[in-house]
Every structure is written in C-alpha cells, then in structure tokens.
Image (cartoon, rainbow, N blue to C red; front, side, top):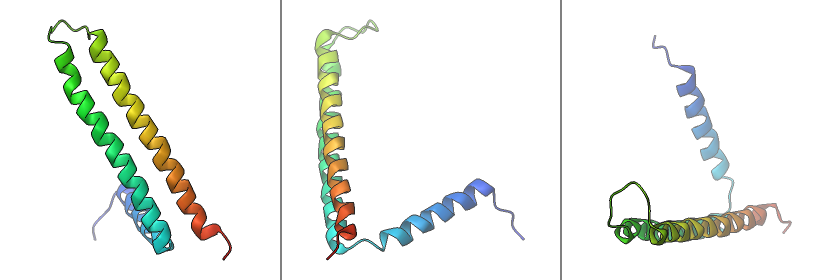
Length: 102
C-alpha cells in the first residue's frame, strides 16, 4: 500500500472541491468570470510590456534605477492594480448572478 503525504491529499481534496463548486455556476456567470479573466490578462500583458522596456530607460548598470525607469515601473504597477480591481469587481458581480432570485 502506498503512503501519500498529507499535504498532497489536502491539495487534491481542495482541487476536487473547487471543481465541484465551479460546476454550480451558471453559464452566464462563467462567461462573466471569463471576461474578468480577460481584463486581468490584458492589464498584466500591458504592464509586462512596460516593465520589459523600463530597463532601457536606464542604460547605466550601477545598481541604481533612473527616475524614468522607476516612473515606468510605477505606471506598470498602477495598470496591473487597476486591472486587478476591475476584474475583482466583475467577478463579484458574476458571483451575485446565481444568488439573485429569479
């Protein structure tokens, strides 16, 4: 008989539970959550692109980031945060779809 570690069993149990709960969502709720994921992914992609070019704003390798690089990275963080907040709000609305009477 094989022995399985408790953390592995716990992870598998949580995964099975989340799959069973996701089956309770309506198609409309799932579509809304997919849109929220798309918003989050788009914000992440835009932020990643900004971060990828931020290093070019500081050509000197001295361990100190330039103001331009820091500003671009801050902009990327703001875009990512805004996308996350918008997606979270969309998911909250989607969760309410199945709870609303009707």
